[in-house]
Length: 287
Image 1 (cartoon, rainbow, N blue to C red):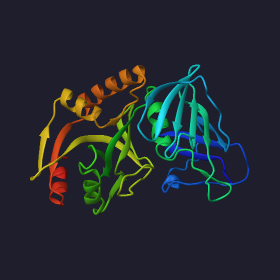
Image 2 (tube, one colour):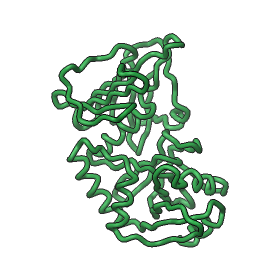
Image 3 (cartoon, rainbow, N blue to C red):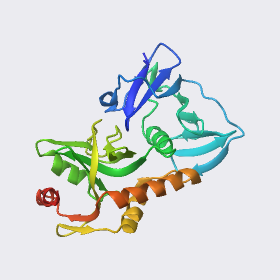
Image 4 (cartoon, helix red, strand yellow):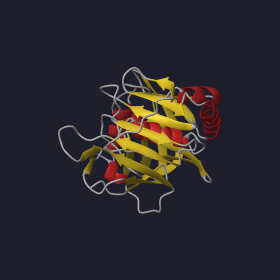
């Protein structure tokens, strides 16, 4: 059945509470790796079948094919409709995103099997809005933990995030926490990276976390090199490779301040690399 499902994402404990006791979810591949035994800080009510209508809602952002953001009487609404205008996931949240309702549809071919509420892109959209309230950011990057240190390799599509993650993964004592989407948060001891379940083509996703010690902006090149970036250059580079709630000016202001602090605190460099182990040796020698 769709049980109460507690997840830990970015150090936040989130509980999914279904409204019925029959059926099951279509789990995303890595969801079970993020189960949490902690008491939930955030509770989301899950409605299996049947969707609330918002006829007076205002569209504030819309993609060409898959989803739109709306507002209605102070609430934020995430409407996921990958194949038709009829949603198959609908999220309704207050301004702080620390509670809410997610409506999920049934698999057309398998009775009593429901889409997992935080499947992509609902999971990422919910999380980037939640983090944008002052908690952190979701960045388009691969994340690596080596000798207790966190390395962030950020890039746009085809920049080499999965390639460099695979090179690291071949080494002992390395944990690749994701090859596509990584959470970054600012905590008392400094910045920290966290894995997410929404992996890239490499399928790498772990719930581990570590202090962030180096940021690399990836660039395809015909040789290995590391080039230091100024704080302004790094801020612009990371902003262009992050998941930003463009429909919310307050969240944008928070993210700009967050990135300015991150890039002033953590070494940020451009990384050109060849797709072989020589680039890993270069990075390890940096420290």
